[in-house]
Amino acid sequence: MDNNVICEGCGAILQTEDDKEIGYVPKSSLQKSNLLCKRCFQLRHYNKHEAVSLDSDDFLDLVSKIRDTDSLIIHLIDIFDVDGTLLKSLPRIVGTNPIILVGNKVDLLPKSTNQRKVRNWLFSRAKEAGINVLDVFLISSIKSHNIEELAMEMEIRRKNKDIYVVGVTNVGKSTFINQFIKRSTGIKEAITTSYFPGTTLGFIEIPLDRNSALIDTPGIMNHQQMAHYVSKSDLKIITPKKEIKPRNYQLQSGQTLFIGGLARLDFIKGENQPFVCYFSNEVPIHRTKLENADSLYERQVGKLLTPPNQETLANIPPLVKSAYRLHEQYTDIVFPGLGWITVLDSNVTVEAYSPKGVNISVRKTFN
Image 1: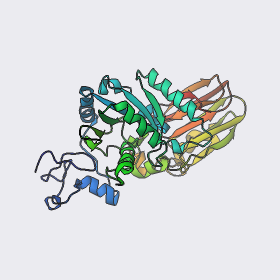
Image 2: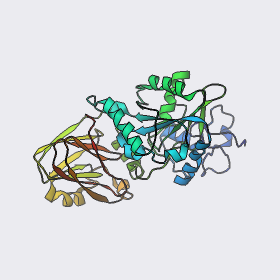
Image 3: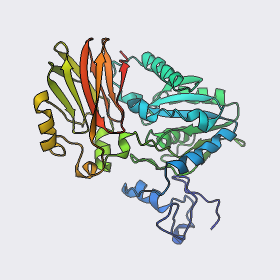
Image 4: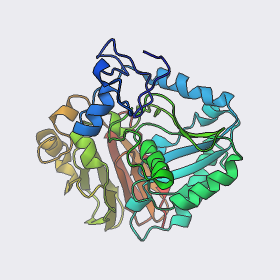
């Protein structure tokens, strides 16, 4: 078949020879007007997900072609996983093209969150990472929050050039672009979306005018993301779908919080105080004495302490410890891909655990 024909769901070049390879479509489907590869068809209609054979280097090689273009870059990140989704390699990928940083999933932040402070913090994080950005927007791809304002800014900044949407896997790039398509044409779900990493496999171009396009790019694999270690069912649980409801736990030193069985925080030293937890509302949190924490984990991980389920347990690295001495009030202990715990007081010592390779960070809280 014509080598230029691509899947309208993921951007892969379509082929009819091997149903185990990327881009396979049955010959009987070639007459259809909206062609989807077998993988996208099953994902869209049956929510079935097939692994792909592209690795991290394949994805990086493909998106690095952007640096040879003259275009505007939209770098989409997940507000709930900034460390896992902010691409420190972005300047190498996009060259000197101008960048707008877009924090997705703002609708999931508690209503009390100071969004101005979030924007300023993202500016600072980008600068620390060596990424110069024109502006920062906070949006919700699913709820369309601030999409109109961003669209107007994109139109002004692009100066009739192409726009590339770049990000790691699972930040919501395809949902983001579908909002723009729906906004312009009324068409829903033009590009395949899912919870699962690696859905888009090639460049997908949506014309903006006769000479330029909005271009969805493959998600770049970052194996420091929690999403790469958990099962499909666990990923649905830990991925917030509604506004996060803060959960308060009054702790004294010598107590432990388990976030399911995927993370843990030990309160080692400090005055009795509340610890405020911001995680998916579906993730259970358990409090216990520090002296009982190790044995509880060994006996109950995958049972009382869930997620992880048994499928995740077979793949996830062991939990490793990081120790922190917190000198300031209102500090967040961030568990990438899960959420964060706010420690209200100063002069506090905690020990935090996450799967090896999923690195915990500390930041000044937003509010």
